[in-house]
Each structure stands twice: as structure tokens, then as C-alpha cells.
Length: 325
Image (cartoon, rainbow, N blue to C red; front, side, top):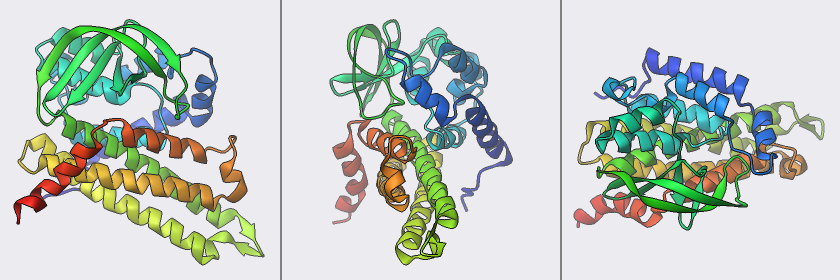
């Protein structure tokens, strides 16, 4: 029987990353960074501290300067990144380091893992979290490529914690063929989305216990109670599918793509509904800029469209069913 429960080491990764993010990148700090015109999503000093903790190289081999761990450990980290709406190119740098390592450029993989090179990500005609001199990650169903970013022109985006831009890039610096790279990306995004769902679940539950209306806590009212319960169910279902997908993708099984796509779709659906319900549960204050509720909804919307493979994701989920007829 497969054990989906996190190990003590994995729980330690989650606890340590949660503590660091709470101290170094609280939402107040995220808002401050977002308010700086032309500024980075995360400052260089904080980024290097994250790299020093090994966050960008958890699954890289020790030969490439990594820790030699697996996707399950990355899931524990990315779950906390989602909970805290951490800014910065974490997902693209982790995936970019893997592309460099598997593409035969161990030196570049090490530079990314040590935080000396950042990796942004393409989103249609735009790029996110990429600056001139950075690398840009492009993914498709066959693998990934890294390009040098030459110029960028900032544009406004939906998520205040993410930097959007138009960019010009050079020829690919390195490429790798890996049909499970997109599946791996889906798992990491699903982990972030799960963290978002868990965060707004807790936010709503806390508010429902303390906000008093008509002489009683609003959690006593059926509509609020049911929305909080739906958030808890969404988190539970996503977590179970996510951990299963992480193990199968790491093992490279034939079912890996199906389970990764399923985890991603469940995570998207759960996070979108939960973040919207969280705003509803908070009433008028939930719609204000000063409250954090809208930040979670905006990040969930970004993560839904980040891979630009929604049709491919649905095909991966539906393919096994088609083969049964």
C-alpha cells in the first residue's frame, strides 16, 4: 500500500519554510514590494537567502549543487509558498534548474540553484518575473527550453505579487527533452493552489468564529458554515490527489501525466471557488483593497492560466476514459 503521509523530514521542510516566509515575506512585505514602481517582486537579498536554504535546488542532484531530494519535498515547499503568496520566480527557477541539469549544463543549473541566475516564465505574449539578464523558461509537451532575456517592458497584471512584461529573448541557451516536465510543473502549481485553498479556509473559519452578527457568530449561519465546509473538502480532495501525483511523476509511471493533470484541475477548481467564497464570507470588508482576500483570488487566477495548457490538461485527464470505449 502506498503511504501518502508526509515523512518527518518533509514535515520539517514545510515547518521551516513556513517560519521563514512568515518572518521574511509576510503579506505586508509583499504589498510593500508591489508598491515600488519598477521594483522586483522580491529583493536580491531575500532571494539569495531562499537559495541558501536550498529551496531552488531541492530535487537537483548533488553533482549539480542540489540536495538530491524529490518532488514530494518540493510539494511541501510550494504548498507553503502558496499559503503565503510568496512573490518571486520560485516555480520557474526550480523548473529551469531542472531543464539546465537535464540539458547537460550543470554549471547553469548550479547558478540557478544558488540564486545567482533567476528564471522567469513565458505566459503567452508576456513574461512573468523576468528582468534583462535573467533566463526565460518555455515549456511544451516535449520538454523545456531556457532563453536569455534581452529587454523587458513592464505591463500591468492581475496579481500584485507578480511582475508582468513584454520581452525580447535570444536563442535557446539550453533545452531538454522530458515528456514529464509539464506534469512536474502541474504538480508544483497544484501545490501552490492547495496552499491558497488552505489559507483562505483558515481565514474564513477564523472570521466565522469571531465575527458576530445578530447576536451570534456568523459561523452559526448555514450559508457561511457550508462555504467553510466546502473549502475544507476542496483542500482534502486536492491534497490526496496531489500527493499521489507527486509520487507517480517522480517514479515516471505511465499514469503520471493523468494524475498530475487531475491534481492540477482539482486544485484550480478548489482554489478559485474557495477564494471567491472567502471574499463572500467576509462581507463588505472582503471586497476592499486593504483586506488580503482579493490577493488570494488573483494569485489563483494567475496559476490557472500560467501553463497555457488547459486543453492539454483536460486531454490528459480524459484520455484514459476514451481508451475504455
